[in-house]
Image 1 (tube, rainbow, N blue to C red):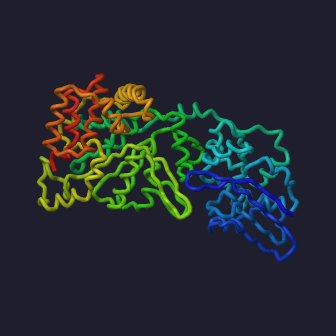
Image 2 (image 1 turned 90 degrees about the horizontal axis):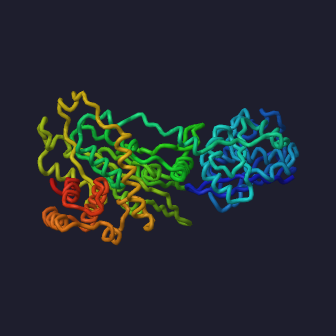
Image 3 (image 1 turned 120 degrees about the vertical axis):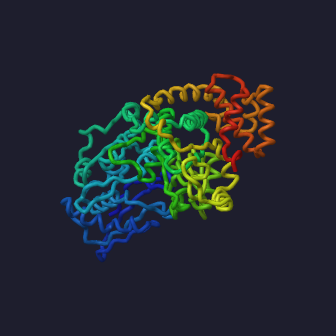
Length: 508
């Protein structure tokens, strides 16, 4: 007998329907699984047999053929276990095949028949609402993630036996529901706060400017000056995620299996902190079945690269495209994939290999050649895409012992939200939301300079040798500083502060 069960697979962060066809016929007791399945799926026949037996059902001692259609797409993951098990039960007439017609089924099976969570529930749910099927059977640990989509009817269950009982009598039950807006509002707290940082007033001002305009930032300073501490607090001053942004972020994390059980929705800005030994594929994304990398997991948040010169050259150069396009494109033989990558890049580095060049407390042991080689690990085109370069000096005793409380993240965030609202109103017709995204045409339209500011910028171009991209970066940062100052035109002091944020152009 033939049975069909609807399930879904993932390619990158996109979901596609998979029809699990199971045929049980006379012949030698063997299981054949076809449909371009990876080893994780091929192993499912080993998991499904004891799961069926331990749930109180009979394993058919006949020839079983399982087909995952469409057969021309490579499939991965363990989410097809439950569909295969139900298909075998239906094909062997232990359950009515008609009961499976209106449901999409997802779940990994344990040997005792219990259901384990699977990845990619949110992108699969978003794909389901475009189809005729609106009922989704899945493990309990995935329930909150699926229920974010109000158009779905979500049926979370514990084990295979409970799934069969539900299919035989589902009219008496009600689907699982949650309020995504309430979930978003209740889980927006951060542990860290800017009030914990003593001193470093210039660095904190630069971070405020960076977040207000969505600018990329590079911090240069000796070990122990607080670069990492500053970076980890950047998400606390970023505007709260909207529901649409939270769904975007959650979709990427769901496809990468990065959502903790029972959480359901990513409610705070991501902060990704990869080690400098990271591989190209882990940073950018990739694999035989492409998966999002760190730059996509940082979407709508912060990507922090500490010890920037220690990263592999190919990894650093790969950042150039997403910093311009807010997306990363990965090509394979038969198709290409686009992953969103709209993030603030925050980098930190020492000024030299020993870390003490220009440090007033310790002498530098590096010669000029070593320093230049160290700096040359970062290419000019990448530096041009980083709007703000600042020096973060060592802290003095009086800064650390200052009894006065520093400004909190909440206070800084309030100013940033006002500025972001101004930028959104100004740029909404352009399809962008903050100053860092302005093109050359938009810079010319919105970055209006007073005469004194124009003269100062001309002089800076001659002295610092700024590239055309560096020139545009200064104008964008100046526009953000003017917005923080509540000014409609860019004045000389705004240009002056923006120039100060080109530390590498001045010192090296």
